[in-house]
Amino acid sequence: MRHLLNPLDFSVEETDRLLDLAADIEQNLPKYSHVCDGRKLATLFYEPSTRTRLSFESAMLSLGGSVLGFSSANSSSATKGESVSDTIRMISCYADIAAMRHPKEGAALVASNAAKIPVINAGDGGHQHPTQTLTDLMTIRSLAGRLNNMTIGLCGDLKFGRTVHSLIDAMVRYPGIRFYLISPDELRIPGYIRQDVLEANHIEYKEVNNLDEAMPELDILYMTRVQKERFFNEEDYIRLKDCYILDRKKMKLAKENMFVLHPLPRVNEISTEVDDDPRAAYFRQAQYGVYVRMALIMTLLEVEKPC
Ligand code: CP
Image (cartoon, rainbow, N blue to C red; front, side, top):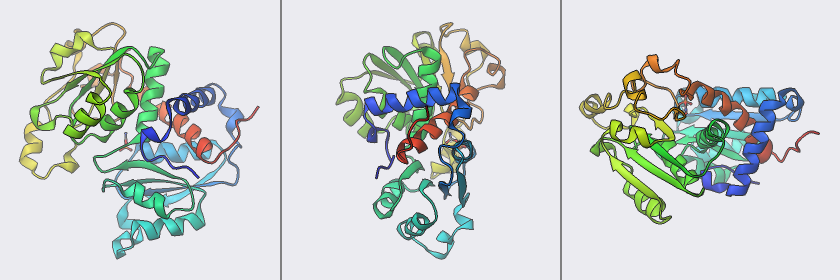
């Protein structure tokens, strides 16, 4: 039995196979409409979500399966003190696979150790968000046509932004990747990622405060929200929350074939005036999230690809 807790749980070859399956699902959606008949997905969300939870549910329904679960800790027995381990043991009796989001880093790992079914990490604190990464990879591969030889700008809250941490882990495995890490000093990428991932893999990267300086170099600009919920001090959040705002003027500095991604939700960091720019890919990205999660459910449940 396999889980997905971290993007590195799948090798590059497995990731590429999963992206190929997601691309086939995108092209031939009706072919997949019964491959999970009779199977159940549990969505255990101890933290708010729109895209991840609903795209998982949409994915399972599109495969012919059904869904159950809770959308906040308050509506589960966590409020009575039930542990994640006990909860997942129960859920293993009710469902075939579970997607779990939790505010604590490592919660999905704890769940996987007690589970009798595959567990998918749908976000654990400021740590990892591997299904967002699969979504990001599908978006980049579909729009740019490759996952290698590109310069990627990661902009905003690089300290608490789990999507950025997972994306770096995944992208350093492809050749010719360079990063611009664009953040205020207080929200720089954690030291362990700089040392254990970037430097350990001899990846070229530059840390800068200024988005304008990086813009002309980028093939992909990955914007992120400042993660209000992870701040200890509201004053710091208010001071930093609008540190970058991507607008039409800044887009003029970018290459004609650069793409803007954002895991969403956005707050102010991308002006709505950018939404009409053909390079704005964040809503298409959310759509790719459904195909990728369909492919992931099939892979973890070992469902054969239909003819
Ligand atoms: N991208 C993402 O994780 O969005 P949600 O928080 O809405 O699930």
